[in-house]
Image (cartoon, rainbow over all chains, first blue to last red; front, side, top):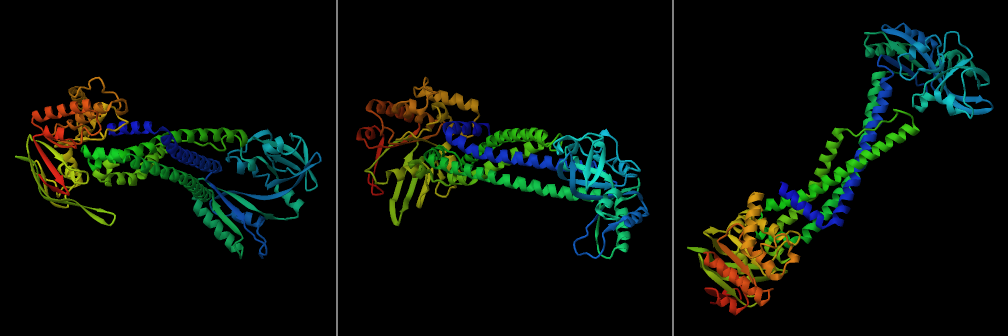
Length: 393
Length: 222
């Protein structure tokens, strides 16, 4: 095999420009594959990690009331009903709305969450990211105060908001009592939290809730508790105006979504690799045509068909392998660059792309396969040449 | 013993829509150690005859024996084995691989035979010294004169120590001095007991062979 490789390297050195151009096709293809797959993997990992931080002992009930529905969605009485379900530790209602806000004369729309101040800290205490940067969490009895995400504090308004400042929401003044640490997720970092009752009064929504976060007792089966909650709610609502999902289910669906993204990414990149393979096939056919007299000489001096086949397959395989190695290197650089860019513009640890050893081995195997497969037809043509005619050129 | 024997060999080509009868029933026996010259005008079928004798091609009809192997029904790979082990080729156009050095060209047939690198290099160097190119081993064909290239070609033909040497107008592209060198080497190889079959245009060289076969219109006429 070494001898075949030696011969191939001589052949490549002989047609440098052509070899370089052929390699370029594979390099671009493999670079794209490695970069795309590593970004895809980084994205899914980021999403999953963020989600896992939420904990697997949670059940989320969301109102899905659509326009024209007869029911009135989820209400406080549903919250109480869920609280009585066997296996539920505690229940925290939530009301979420996008609404106008004003700070020092600057008006902007922000996401406001209404939470039960008695339960808010307990609900989120084991959820990653809700640690205090300054001030405190919502506390029982809080009325006209808010806790804000880091971005709201930092650069949401022209002037940064500090603990003790007042912002106006729906015409009412609220004092900022706490600021969360930055987590890197723009949604999470730009949320404003307040007492759910205050928010509903402001909006005139009485006792409706948009979501209910349920924490399951230790040892209880999350899926069974979720089924019980669903049963309970079905008895209370004629239409299905709600959706019960466990955090595990949400994680699964997110995982399958990111998998699709990865496949799409990889698929797009694979197309460019296909083009690279066609480039190899093209070069190899040219090589076979140009080297026809040489193939004649090989046959006349006793080379078997297998040996000739092998000479050309090794040559195209090496095209794939060299292109693949360089491509992996560039893909790795791109992946690193994206890491740095993500850290700079999106925040730390939000998107960590990685080129794993597995990925490198797979990419090498893949590029070798592309090279060899691209060489099959040209090699077959070389084998089929008649020695007498080949010698004539 | 006949090293080469042709029995009623016919060879027909299809060129476009025309059938060309290149050989029309050739019978020929060449004994071991013979030195045979094949002559004939162009288009007479002497190249086709050479291809049959050299196991480069199979006959359309009839049978060809090389050292008692019937090549008429052989597979490509069996033919390759005969060419590799029993026959050494010398061509008018030298047919060296231009990217490879002299010694690498000589190594090729031994590579096909599966010989180890060390043995190959040793034997190739020995053969190049034998044809007087001990100081040109690392040169590429483009850096060699015609006579030198032909000597590389002879070294390559001898690589696997074949009994038969097929020389297709070996002096056709050489000046008279180089031609004389080549002829002397061929004669020396013949004296060692190798069978030489040489196609030539030149009476002078044909006369130096032990027997001259003349072919015309696909038939041996004398």
